[in-house]
Length: 288
Image (cartoon, rainbow, N blue to C red; front, side, top):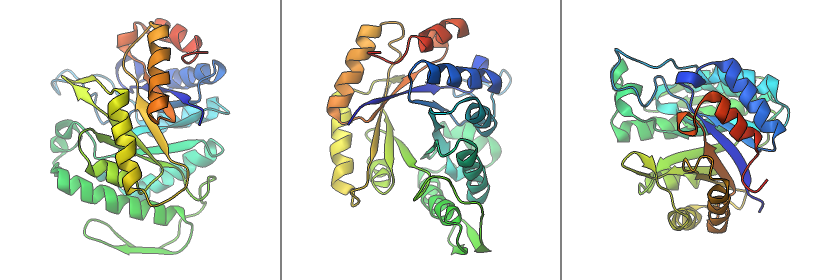
């Protein structure tokens, strides 16, 4: 399978302007990139204190701008913390975006980190098991509402009675769902095996450190738990190799050999100024 290339963008600081994200997505599309994915946070992960926060944009507003600015590139979140969202509201948002983009939305989902700024600051339970339960049940509600058929649900966390949401997504059988998780946690990988893709991360001292060997282990583990033969995406989270295009190209090739179907190249301050990031995107994906 051909490896596809995506931009992985923050939504804070200089990247909190939805118009800028729309322009960057269009530039990526024109420069040969296959996807443009953005974070979903209430505050910047780098904020050390609520007294000096960075500006943050709402991801759904930004994605709407990106959808109308582009025509081919796949867009989505990496990743949306369903445990802190009402799944019926998310159902409306995602279907609206899928239709606005003519079926180009991918929904990345996860527990949401850091727990302090995403949950505890707002009085919500951040216990991993609670968040995991809300994620699984939230996905059940979300996909039930996407169906366009009469839907009811009574669970431990959510309740829906005789709801029917129209319109339905453009994509069939549903908007693709990629599940994020941090290696070496296995539970997110088993969850991913039930859906359409996996977006794993591996950090050492807070920095991306995924290797092809680790990614291959992840691919094999997910494969052991996957019961469907439908297409399944594996996203390799790239490191900030920046302007070293040969290293970037070599890394992408190594991830492809390990089983990746997507390579997500991060952008942000590590690449320099916004102008430098634009030039970097305009150079095209690795190997272009």
